[in-house]
Amino acid sequence: MELTTQELERIEREVLRYPVWVQEHYYTMVANGQSPRFALMCACQQAPGTRYTDRTFNVERHQVMNEMKPKMRDKYLQQARKAGISTQGKYYVGALGRPTDARAWVSTVDEATAVCRAKNLTADGIVKHNGWEVPPKRKRLADNLRDAYVRERLSQDVPLAAKCASDPREMRRVQDEVVDRHGSSRSSIDP
Image (cartoon, rainbow, N blue to C red):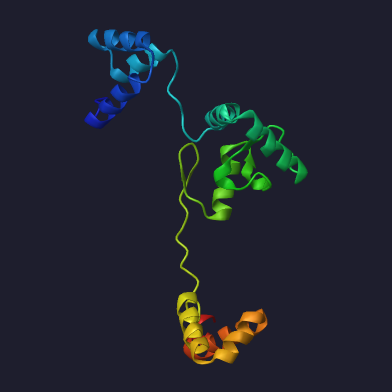
């Protein structure tokens, strides 16, 4: 099977990340007629990694947890224990949630994918999932427009401005009046 130029460039870049003895072994094998993929596998003395498997997932997550600063790792584990989460055989994946979120502690690719599906997250790596675009929630009146109308109204009514400054409920009442007057009707926003 013939390699594309991009694949060959990727392999060549990957070879440069290894020690000199691995690079020499690789270049010797390629010079002797071996394919670059096979030469890389032999020079590294490791089969190519596989995506979307629990073994690959666990190896990578184990490495991430071990490379974490001990103080930070201990803090994550402590927070999980406090939240009543069993971390036995599980790894913390920060992209899935906080340490106090049980769904952020996973042990398989399927669990991580299920969390991505439930939280509508997009992941591309050992775990592959495409989230879907959620349309923004419609509001009757954008906050910046509401605030501009409120400022204009308060600048024209100094006693009301003083009352709003001392009473947050009065400010909310004025904001609601502005939304009722300048915002779109509710029936066109929500069914």
